[in-house]
Amino acid sequence: MPHINLKHFPAPLTEERRSELVADLTAAVRRAFGCDEGVISIGLEPVAEADWNERVYAPEIVGRKDLLHKTPNY
Image 1 (cartoon, rainbow, N blue to C red):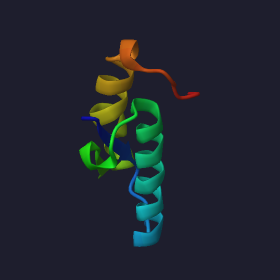
Image 2 (spheres, rainbow, N blue to C red):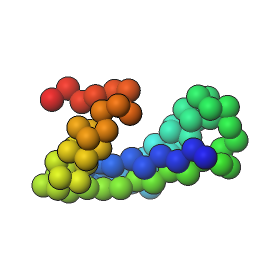
Image 3 (tube, rainbow, N blue to C red):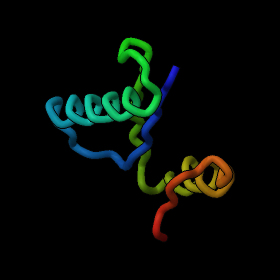
């Protein structure tokens, strides 16, 4: 507890940028939940742009609106 699975278009993230992203997400989760970083897990999942609507937008954004706290502007 807690777990983040961040889906995104494929991007050429360097190991440094990936580490910064994971560190920033970890810090935000620690602040919000007051938990130790050792209990946080984070996955980065690239999803091809051509597959985005079917794999992410329809099932997770449209289909689970009740869980969203920030919606895309499109």
